[in-house]
Amino acid sequence: MQIKETFSQGLKRSYEISIPAKDIDTKLNGRLEVIGKRVKISGFRPGKVPLALLKQRYKTEALSEVVEDCMEKGVQQAIKENNLKPALKPKVNVKSFEEGKDLTFSIEMEILPTIGDIELDNMAFDKYVVTVSPEAITGVLEKLAKQTRKTSSIQKSRKTKKGDIAIIDFEGFVEGKPIEGGSGKGHALELGSGSFIPGFEEQLINQEKGAHVEVKVTFPEDYQESNYANKPARFDVTITDIHEADPIVIDAALAEKLGFESLEAMKKWVEKSISNDYTAQSFLNIKRHVLDALADRFPFEVPENMIDLEFNNIWDQLCRELGVDQGKAANANVKDKIGSKTFEEAAGKSEEELQKEYKMIAERRVRLGILLAEIGMRNNIVVTNQELMNALTARAREFPGQENEVFDFYRNNESALATLRAPIFENKVVEFILDKAKVTEKSITPEELEKLLASEEEEAEKKISAAAKKSKKPTKKKDS
Image 1 (spheres, rainbow, N blue to C red):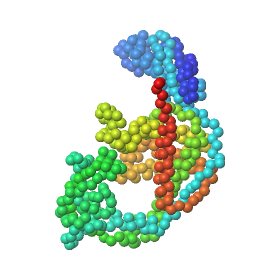
Image 2: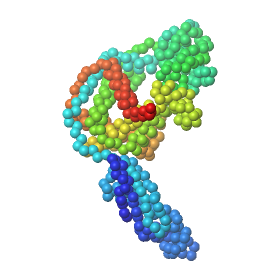
Image 3: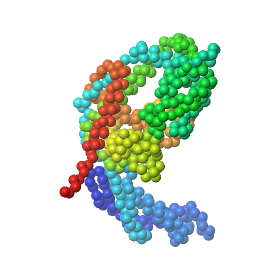
Image 4: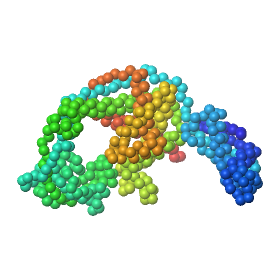
């Protein structure tokens, strides 16, 4: 086997590999002998079939297997001899092959970058600490009491008022067509809860049982179903009953109903739950700053094929979130089309602008993924079986009654299991970095934390957008 490097620039590598015809012929004969031991041919005992007859009947099949095996071993040999770490599976192209002649093929790949010393010293971060207030605990307890309290039909005939639970049948229409998922029967709607489209519940107040109401509203501009965003809608509503709810009472009886030993135990559980939520939000904040610091400190080259793969995944997800049917958009022959909208209308930016931004996001994710993996490897950071099992159990709990199916799916699907393992590993590496860094704790209110997270999210989006615009190539001036 001869291996010759034909291209080496940056992270890209190409090799030409030649395997002598005699080696292929030897492997072919060996493969045919294996076949001869298991096939049954009339007039011959297993293992005694003449090689010429085996070639006549099985040469094509055997030769295909031999060539494939030779190429696979050639790729592995090239990787081993040149001490390569391919970013993704190498591309293989057969240049020429005729029976009785040498097999020549080429391989192309991008390799993972070599990262030198990873200095994690002199890093400093602020960690925001939120104290759980009695008001926050009371607020959650009131929600729990509200969710579990009983309701009953009103005894005396009267019109609906704020706080009533209206039992309604409804059907919605936009531009005269039924809204997908916009109908229901026997739905319990608390008037004034704000759980429906703005303006919907108000039109059901001061109505009698049995009333038929034509509710007219406009979907919000940021409505999750972009096809309906900012569009007027009509709902035909029938109030089939009016219920009143029992008063909200937070006591030992509520605690017992929810499975707690006492009212105090319930309060402590609520306090811990709120605290865990604040801690998780605070960790997301400091994690963002850690990743930003790493991205700025280690600006190494990233394999283009990994960026493309990550970008395609992100782009597909974005299109799904925006309600994009890319095939339909292409068939419509309308630039930047998203169903009945353009990218400009749905996201406020052109397809080209969005792709530039998400390409940069993809590059950042890949770079950080490579760096975190390297830090983890050098410091023996691994995800334990128990940690993975905890994540799997938490995931299964999201599907009550289907826990066994969820467990089976992940156990039999390595790529799905990897989606659970990846964030655990990433967080462990971030925690390792924080252990080495100078971390200053700062007290902050829940409102301040929420505002801070939103502000930093907005700032990050502006930063990406500005960088994408800056990366645009200047247009050539026309000759005068």
